Image 1 (tube, helix red, strand yellow):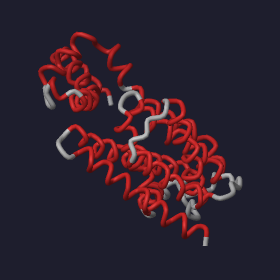
Image 2: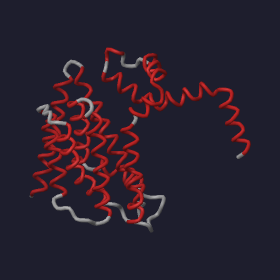
Image 3: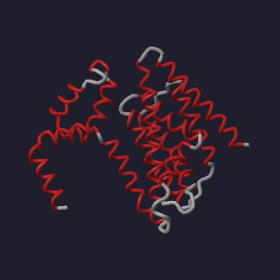
Image 4: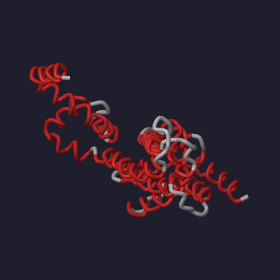
Length: 260
């Protein structure tokens, strides 16, 4: 341990400035890419431009621009105590894979998660990030209710309606105010989270399971955002609208199944 610490100190002493810049670059690079993706006139992969912006604004800018991911991590940490308490005797090695696969095991979940990202892309900043952050946060609360066995009526209907409504929002490019869009997304997130939490496999670790389905949800939102960014290319707007229409049709089909 002492030898490893000495080697690390020697490394930082010899390459301190470069090492610090590398860490800053790794942290800020994803946001710099997304910023350039939204502003093609600045260059999609303008590494030099991104580096100059980081050097000019420093860690203060990185702390501000990386808040969505820090917020998402905070959701998992906030959920962990109650989730661990709800299944304290669970096996610590299980649950993550089940939680990771659960959101993509049902088409009704997948289309709704992707639709959140699509709608955020249609609305543009700040909704581009607010919606994909608000959804997992509230979904984590719904997952906690499911883990604790708190009943919520009409969960399957709510999940189906979420796909139908958000698909229509994308199809017709509806642009409500930011607070209303976040409220709509958050309301549907409760149903999705409750379904995930209530279906925790027996003997699985609730904390790992919860963390995993939040991660998968975020990745599905990211897929929707990337698909939505095709709007800035020729034909991309129609493509996104068509995707919204497909989501709405899938939601309508699941709604018919839930009502029969």
